[in-house]
Image (cartoon, rainbow, N blue to C red; front, side, top):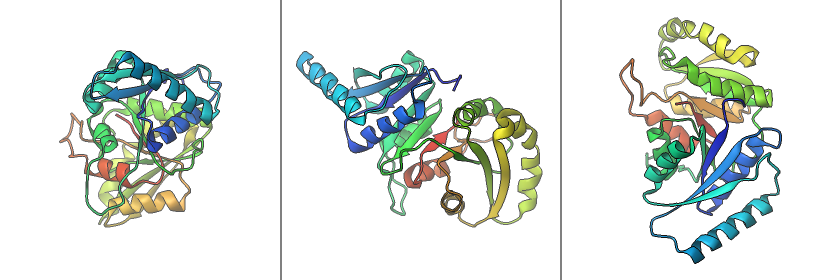
Length: 263
């Protein structure tokens, strides 16, 4: 994973945070010289005694996970608003990727969690790890594309690094509601981009009809035993009209596998 040198993991000692750290340790492995920085954010000032206790508890959690990495994970303690502090620390640490745990939400509504809000606001790649997901290295990756042309193809470079590191295949999925014609016309302009940036790891491009796009994606994940879902959020689009990020939010809340947003 040559483009990934440092990963930031928001960490508050909850079960989702521990699961995200566990996933990160497996994701990085021993051979990749990637620095893992966990970030503990407090809303109040942390005393020296509390700081020592947090550091000791973190060391204990890392030891309990019992996974070796090239460099030992470090812990950063900071004070402030959670999301603002995460994004500020990401820039200060020059982290290439954020990995954050989430409990998700199976309700039919559209509530926001800390993770789903962060995914919408972050200007960098984020992997949201749903609590309860099986901790394993990705072998089958699904990249969801809409009918729009890929605006920033270079973001696929990180996906290539992930696929190359795990020798994973990338299956591209487009869900259409009515006519496939428009989607195919636009997506054909993306084929050269996919072949160039994903190399031989690009396996296939599947078109499936479903009135409910989210359901179509989640069904595909289950049917094809997908390990990692990748999406290109359009809420920061500059060449076309930005979206509200509704699909990104829903997938972060409801996906049973980790979701990689390429931003």
